[in-house]
Length: 399
Ligand SMILES: Cc1cc2nc3c(=O)[nH]c(=O)nc-3n(C[C@H](O)[C@H](O)[C@H](O)COP(=O)(O)OP(=O)(O)OC[C@H]3O[C@@H](n4cnc5c(N)ncnc54)[C@H](O)[C@@H]3O)c2cc1C
Image 1 (cartoon, helix red, strand yellow):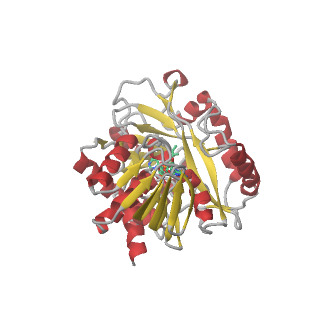
Image 2: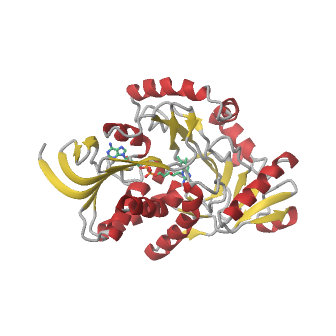
Image 3: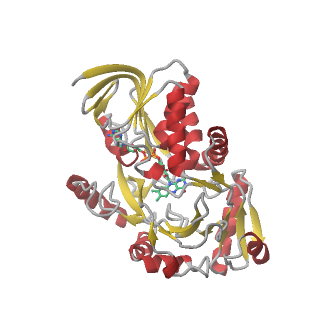
């Protein structure tokens, strides 16, 4: 071990959540020594750079959840951050459309949740939908969310790392943490004596937490998100178009989003993945992970809390591009497979699974350990919510 460094706080993982936590720690303790350790040699290599870049509004979530509390606030903070750092945001808004009369009660429920969560939201009719997004179709009613927007996720992460560094923090790339416990973190070539450790290791957050004896009742299940870009002229699709989600599962269903430069894309899927960084091919393959995940999925498959059979029936066929694109046609009838052939960069969702109850955790989950805090379930929309989550967690640590 070549050298040893002392820090007030060491953050494991330099995704948006780890960077936001370092940023919030430095905002509160400006003279603190804060080090972020990121195993990759570039920023945003995983979920924080491989997502849709949608700034969610915060209306999906149960009013008593952390997601409800922190997404509306996170959307506002991220808008302010992007304005401050000159990161482009496209104010697309979003429509949620119904595919039949049977979905209208759930659409009204989403509207009620939005109101309970203090999110600006409107129930609109078919004529109003045509004005907002002429390409979308609904059945009777749709929801209009004006505060949903989009940004380039990689640009946001890079801008946040720059702010952490300007505040005096260090963001070390190529620094894989190989072991940690209260007061001590080791990478392949460095040792850190840490006043406090924050685990924001995304897909590996459970593994890191277990080193501290925290979260042993949890395992991470990875779900792969595939995307297909359209060849349409930028700006042809103006709004994000989403279906009414199935409340029993934590994913939002196939949708169309607009990128910050106006391109239309379809996805992401939520297909069970075989190892954590399973982006396709064999890159990142880890036989040990495959074995452990293969042991955990059967327990999930027997869960009575989720519509697992329905999830598998709907998700597995989405490996087929044509099938996926045809699903999106129910929302936007002019979508055809011939126009959506450009493969996007896939992402993998780090979805926390509670072994004793066989439940996928739907809300953000963090736990404190000895001189440490562990972000165990930084699921979507944690990219939107990161700045609010970080402030909340740092306040909680200090209280
Ligand atoms: C397909 C997809 C679409 C999504 N769409 C949206 C969206 O539109 N809007 C939204 O708000 N959210 C979205 N999300 C969710 C969002 O991307 C995540 O909630 C968020 O990025 C989580 O951030 P993170 O920092 O926890 O994870 P990550 O970005 O995965 O960061 C964790 C980091 O830890 C590092 N790491 C792991 N182990 C170690 C170790 N031992 N040592 C050092 N470093 C380590 C990893 O390399 C990684 O960089 C989406 C997610 C996916 C997968």
